[in-house]
Image (tube, rainbow, N blue to C red; front, side):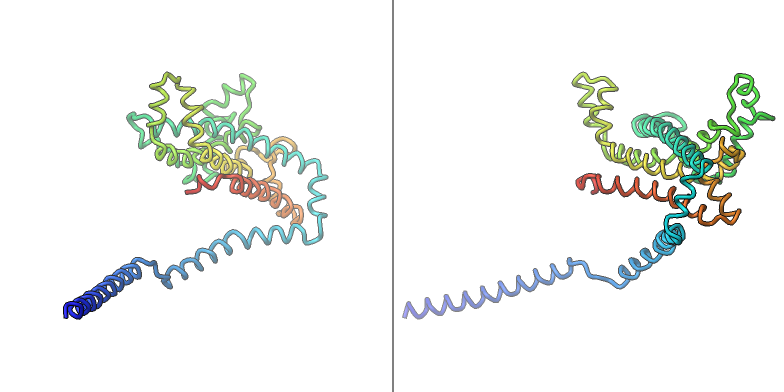
Length: 304
């Protein structure tokens, strides 16, 4: 009799236990189902729109430039690379871009540290002014530089001319214009990374006796290095492709201030479309190659 009662109790407990377990399992499964992200049609539509936008606005036009460049084989490229005037323009563009990148690199890193690590009156105004080159037309930038550094009526132009320094219609003017239009790119890449990095490690290094330069070189710079690299790449791409401001301050003097972008315009207007496409292809190739190389060599752990 006792054995029968025991078997009945075990049977009832097992039945209730299994039922309870099943109920808990169903609740847990429903919770997981609710937490599981659902693929919504809106996400798919948004993805298609973004891809179509990039294809129509970037990929397709660039592919057409490449197509027209090699429409007749490599003859267009060979033509511009054997033309002394075009080679000189390409070399001038590279020199101006490199100098502009170096200036913006030093200025951008220093300005980023100033904006993130220090408090001072007018900080917000200074941060807003840094975006001015992105909002003002490059033509306006060129005219402003002429008004400041021009020989006739410029604020500093006559004095600089008397000192033997010519800015407008010369290489220094090209460097000034290119540097101005690419000014914010390094700053806007470095500032968010500096803010995320914080000051704990820098304070620890200072407490251990490290100088300001040692702290920057061993603590700050390694933390922002990839932001600096991306800022440099964007600045290089922007400098290589600058047209409006350069056109105003250069005077488009053959063999002296004619850059590659001005060569593209001249060849296109003179119906040498093959030469125009080939020159534009070289400029685009340099910019895209720099971005692709950085994206490949960048460590995966920094992509979070």
